[in-house]
Length: 360
Image (cartoon, rainbow, N blue to C red; front, side, top):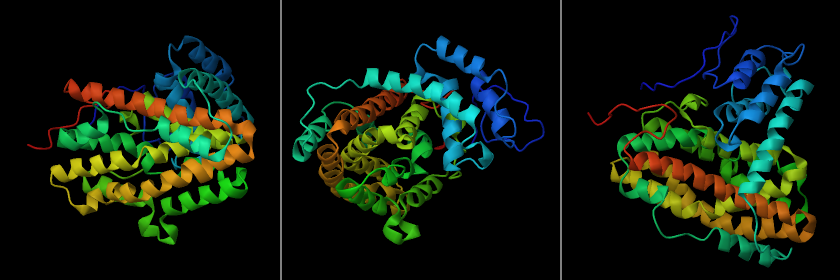
């Protein structure tokens, strides 16, 4: 498959290259630095580069350079890109640069995800608020488009966009496990156990999704399509990492997971229908069909036992629980709007990329 992406060539100095190009001065600097051991920290001009990028961006949520930079910084923690040297994980200059971008990113998310009429910090009240927030809406949406109209090329684009999160499914939310206790911790572990296959490696959701990717004729190597993924999709993944990696934001990652689970079951039914419509079998649709049933159960656990119990046990976290849930929906809407706008105009939703006509 050939995808043409506009990137900035970078000199890797003979080191093994990463499977992606830079999108601006900050991500170019990081790609040069992070593939070698962290012996002396980031280059001396790193603070200036980050400061200028932050000052000049009109919208950090859609900023290619800054979102790719955050993605690379978080990838050091996950180990998701083997080309990144693990010695950078807690290197002070990298953490300082990341913190500057994170603060701007968090401000933008809080502005976009304002909360009106919060509930009381009581288990059932929080659950009701979340179920109202995530109730299905009428009108066009990406799930409906996939079910009824999407072409083979568009279904492949859909999978490519999802590879950023789903080939590492559940990992961002799992950062919260050691940061919770009691009822909310037990509920999170129950959900995550299912995500990781309940002890069966063949049923790990990321593994099942990799099978879907291969079945659609795509590469299931993590990072293979990062160049094709627009900034807003990276932002959606980066928000999970931001919430999960900061203990002070444990309420936000819980709220995010609650909203994530509550908005999963119905769309996944539509996604499965879309692939069946174009003749794909159960090897490809298994991932979506699995989530129709599993997430119908998870949404109840996530709303009441996870988010509701956390709010009741630690009422001071209620604002962040609501913020995390709202941020999840805002980012999902922005991604969906981006994809639908492209598809309805019969152009690619990928970043600068056009898939070949696979039906020929």
